[in-house]
Amino acid sequence: MTLAATSFDWVRQLVHRESAIVLAPGKEYLVEARLLPIARSMGLPDVGQLVDSVRTRPSPESTRRIVEALTTNETSWFRDGDPFTALTSTVLPSLLSARGPAERLQIWSAACSSGQEPYTIAMLLEDALPNAATRVAITATDLSREMVERTRAGRFSQLEVNRGLPAPMLVRHFTRAGTEWEVSPSLRRMVTASECNLAAPLPRLGPFDVVYLRNVLIYFDLPTKQAILRRVRALMRPDGWLFLGAAETTLGVDDSWERVVIGRSSAYRPLKGN
Amino acid sequence: MRALVIDDSRAMRRIVSAALEGFGYETRQAGHGQEALDVLQEGYVPDLCTIDWNMPVMDGLQFVSAVRANPAWRALTLMMVTSESEQGQIVRALAAGAHEYVIKPFTADALRDKLALLGMLPEEAVL
Amino acid sequence: MTLAPDAVARSAQPRLTIPELIDEATVQAIAGEAWVALVGEDEVLVPVPGDLPAETLSAWVDVVGPWTGSVVLTTGRQTAADLTRSLLGVAAPELLDHEDVADAFGEIANVVGGNVKAALPGPSTLGLPQVGEAPGVRNPEDVCRLEVLWRGQPLVVSVQGALPALSTPHPNPPHPNGASL
View 1 (cartoon, chains in turn cyan, orange, red):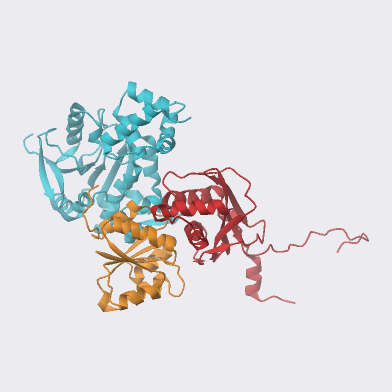
View 2: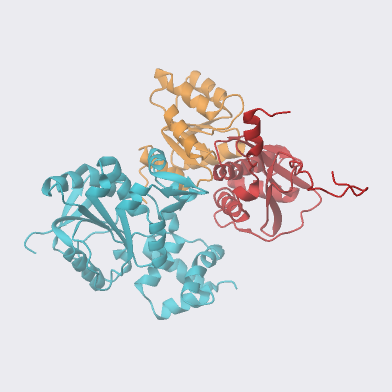
């Protein structure tokens, strides 16, 4: 069943609004192929009905799933670079000197998707710290059970490992499994994945020293963004570090954070006395 | 910035050159390792070489070894672009002196990501 | 006659055949990824058999290692030309010559073959692509054959062993005279 022009247009506008990515006319087949699994997971027979459903009952979750399904090209390792190199250049040294030697650092990848982000962090730490698995714990959460399971599995396709993963790190931290590449056991030991809905009261996680909350706030309206930031902050150590997406900021949303420039990116730290 | 695209497939040379030109590179092509060495010896010294593995006359690994053995070409960045994707082979290529490794099939985005990792994107592309 | 110890060991090792090493779903996944990157990001290979036309062209690469054989792509000549045009994109010349098609189709075989090889036990070497009439199937037990449709046109990916079947003696077939051998 071919997608109606009005439905395709709606999807195009949504994707452009949320990601600035342009879906050219003629990509109806791509939209159908990528969104059909989402429709089916919602018990809907086709993409047209998915579109109708989301138009009448919009939700950040559906929006995010639709946009991500159509822009999965963007899921890469070390996305935007600096927020991750900042970990080893600035954040880690600062935390290690502030914490006791027996304290395990807690890091949260709060929209982990298929796992590239938490494993990027794990790789960096594994290379920077001896016995990293005993010194750091990475909590990876996502709204989607499918994504949580993918993160737990730690297996990636050839096309996926080509995206921003330095070759020396690929051979050091992964082994081939058939046509895929699987993270090493020591990386997997560092990461615990679970489902979590950021827009609802959070489970008792943390307290976290570092939080990566990247490219997920954009899907929510202002009041929800504020609520999420409050809830995240409540799970963070007072001297913790928050990383947002490259185009995101707490400015105009929540003034209880202090912005710290690290290289070409920024981190946000809870303002004292708030 | 300048690139030398080395692949025995004319189609693949066109594809890689077109992608690199899209990122702002000026490109030249060679059909195998020996041809590529000839280009270098004639005095065209690029910033980047993309190198296929399996080629007649001289393969990619031999080319990488030859370049790394020559101090005059120390500043060249060597990036394998090949369907050879056994783990041991990637290790061998890196050990021989390749800086990066792109597995075929690859997308233009993947190539851009790898170049960004190396700091080799002429224009700073903001995603 | 006694056999040398290592000859005994060699003959005792089961020879690896493709059905134990790779399946159609894996070959499909490999070919699918190759198509998306080389032929076009919306391209789909539908796993439905079709009849190849009379005039076909094959492109293949040889794999030599713990398993030895070839990864062979076969399709109609027109399909091969269409693939070439898609692969070259805006760089495609008005008129494609045989060299253009051999080069492009050969490169697709190189990419599919290289990734099939990496899914097999290694280390193995990969030969340069060859284009022409497909090598015949030497051992029907040592083949994985994937039939797909690309834009409705049939294409076959065959992972086929180079070695003929080992002749296995039949267990005591009755002698015409009634005595067993």
